[in-house]
Length: 319
Image (cartoon, rainbow, N blue to C red; front, side, top):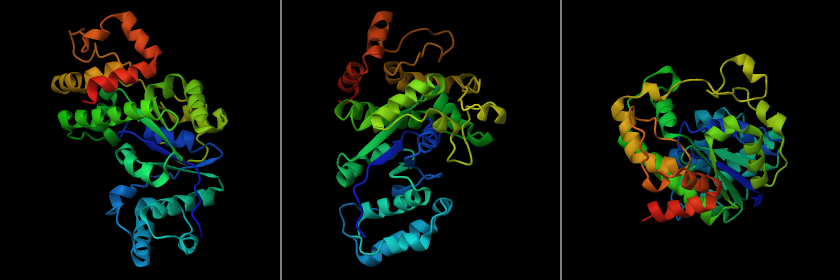
């Protein structure tokens, strides 16, 4: 079997930034097959992209993937996947595609998709594997809300170092903004908040980026996913309305003053470049963290000219 150079859609971004919601929206398009759980290909396997693989090593790596709990949840026909591996050149790229193509075949769609948080850290590998034949959707979210969602994830309070977390947030966003400028036809940066407040416009822009027709009702219904794990829904009744709603949670109030101050000092400058208002992050403070954005007209200018904004970002933060 020959692995075809089919188009590929990859979703990434820091955890709790809306990547799961994006998976369900994009994965419900009639042409895109995205598995219901994260692939975690680079996390679960000891990958050396520059090292060749023997047929036995390829088979062992495939067996390892198919044995993983999250992959089991895809409901693949493992016998068919192994049969499809016959005659394939044994390398990491083909292993990556082979497994995802099994899920595409199951759904009878024509575009392979994959969502794993921090996929953006592997862009160099994706470039080597697929050249320009893939599209990357990069999620970004207000760092205060993202941090709070991590801290209170799944009904439990998790201890998270705000300094380390903030540096990870900055790393992800810098990668996204840089690629947005250098490869705008291949990489799109999407604010989670726009998925909530400007649903049709945002999904239309994403479909245009992917070269697909917008299927708004189908996508908003998330019809290809049994579990709609989207915390922005207020209750089950609202899921039937094919609309995404704010959950009304004041996440800022759930953070300590130390956490708020840390997020402001580390993430604040970059957050403002992305259009987030940081003035409320620390009580009693209304200062802007970036002096050159203190002027309202200057701020509006950069928000209306995202490419100029991105170029400014690169100049400011890529050193």
